[in-house]
Structure formats: C-alpha cells, structure tokens
Length: 185
Image (cartoon, rainbow, N blue to C red):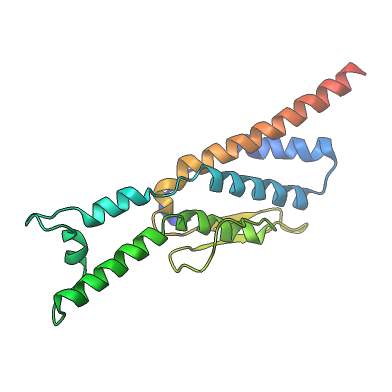
C-alpha cells in the first residue's frame, strides 16, 4: 500500500504499544504480532462488502437503447458471437462480479494468515484478492501487511485507521488500569 499514498496516524499506536510491552512484561515480537492480528481482524470486520443488489441492477440496467442488460452486453465483445453466445458470456460476467463482493476482505485475510489468524467465513481462491503479511521477530520488531486487492487503496484508509484506533484504545485501557492499580498500592 506504500504506492497508494495512504497515510495512517500510527504515532499513538507506537507510543501505546511501547508502554504496553513495558508494563505487561511480554515478549515484544509476539505482542506486536498479536496486535497486528487484531488490527487486521478489525479491518476485516469494518470493511463492507459490495451490495449484490446494486451490482445486479447496475449490470442489468437499461442502456441508451433501452435494452435491459445493456451494460453486460457492451462489456462482452460481440464480434463473431451469436446473440445467445453473447448473452451466456454476459451472464458469466455478472456471475463473476457477484462472486467477488468480498475480495477486499479476503485480501486482508491473506495478510491475517501470516500472523496466525483465521477467517473461516472467507473462502479463498479468487485472483482479485491479493495480500501478504510479515511477522515481527525478536531481531526485527516490525510487523507488516498489505492488502493489494483492486480498490483496497480507496476503501482501506478509514477502515485501517479505525482498526488501529480501536487496538490503541484497548492498550491504553490496560495501561490505565495497570497504573491505577500500581498507584493504589
């Protein structure tokens, strides 16, 4: 996502995870990977799937000539095809469009798999879903993931920021509780 120009505010997350690791006395790499898994899981939950009804009505909408399904027919080259063959290809195009409503979520799921997370509801196997993840290690305290699915750069900004903020709030709650208990002693 580096090429997309997507800018996320991670300063608060970085400060929070540093304090969290210090207070919780947990392994930094494992905790960073766990928090990355949470960010991706929340991003999957917040990412909305495309509306199948809207896709269907858009693809089957009437064209300039008033013919139903005009867009589907315009997208299928008609040279050398009978009307029935062209209609069959158009229905196939609609089927592929309808089956790809969650490919951005599946792109996140590919990154989630690198961190040990699972998304049982999201079936894999589409070529449109593209993503990866790289775990942090004790030598390299950087956890990375990318969702390179088509259109993810347009949708992911607010979703990822909300996910990062939610995980940051969770860590800040822990820090506040831990410091409150230590202060009360």
